[in-house]
Length: 270
DNA sequence: ACCCTCCTGTCA
DNA sequence: TGACAGGAGGGT
Image (cartoon, rainbow, N blue to C red; front, side):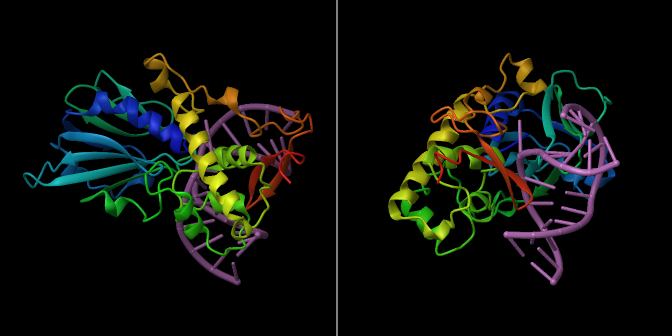
């Protein structure tokens, strides 16, 4: 479910619910998630919720050592879901992997495929890479050109490299390249200055629009707030194999790059 | 770039 | 039954 816009949506919706809440305890139901320092979380107060790349970060006061700060990060990977629940009671449910029990309500972590991770660290930096966030001020055409360098990696897989740029996944990589009219197989290092600038601007435009539409996600949490992802109506190529390009009438194609589907218009993206 | 793995589910 | 799924880490 989550790329940058979906994670941003979850963060914005969770923030008012979680900020100021106190953590009573953390219940870990999936042995794959063992190793979390649940003791230091207990008693901590949630200071804020923020997006750390594709992760959802919670800043807490350390329940054990007074005054200190503590961070925890949820990485939803493919099927993770964070659901705010107003009644706190140790609940069960299919795919429920962990629960953060709060003074009022609880935060439920569901994850069908169990790829998701939960980590605890003393600082946010430990939970992040040094990669550039495309929504930050640092993300300029010049910086993007610098990050790309002379690599021969095709531009679509390059956009998904989380060690350079955080947040872009399969859907938005396809959509961004469509917006640029760039063939996903183009070696990233061969882009002209003008194309890099276009890529930078399209990345921003697509992500901002997707955030504005609350992502492509449909989740129980959003339902409980009466909102659901709306970006699917704006998808130009993702998941549209065989359907007509909205600009030129050509059939959208699907190819495989790095074991992932890439959708593009063979006519608009040469 | 390629391949594989981690998981569980749905769909043709 | 096999292909595929919004992610990422490992190895070659």
